[in-house]
Amino acid sequence: MAGGEKQVMVIGIDESEHSKYALEWTLDRFVAPYASNCPFKLFIVYARPHAASAVCLTGPGGAAGDFLPLVEADLQKTAARVLDNARQICESKSVEISPVLSLQFKAVNDVALEVGEGDPRYVLCEAVDKHHAAILVVGSHGYGTVKRAVLGSVSDYCAHHAHCNVMIVKKPKTKH
Image (cartoon, rainbow, N blue to C red; front, side, top):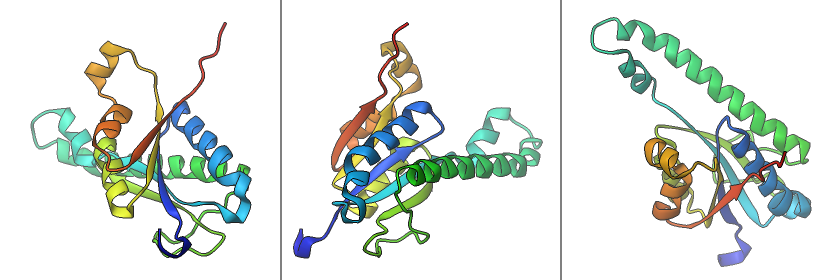
């Protein structure tokens, strides 16, 4: 790193409790203890699905196009809710978020929220490349072998394809 430049950390988020836990865990260990001297620039990234991919599930016919604006509006509301949750988590840890999405950060404002569009696996790997990240943090849903095979695993894909270190944060299971 030339001239004390900070490394970049990308944190993937979604609506899940596992994602929220991973964000909190990361902020508690890598950002909040350092106050204004955090060793990382953080990009908190949410991958929003394409509206057309959701509409395609309605089947063939011209009626699918009628639903596109409704689906788009719903996806925008979801993205706003996810980003608002991330913002609230950051505020609860006294972490200030940059209002501008760029690599040009102010000294005490090294956290930015970002929305990518598409499959989370690809969006996160693209964010790693775009920001030249040193580490990617993702939560783990803890799916078993069958569910992971059917649904796919974002964390597994990123661990194998991201061009940086990948940290998978697992939410502890509660015992009854």
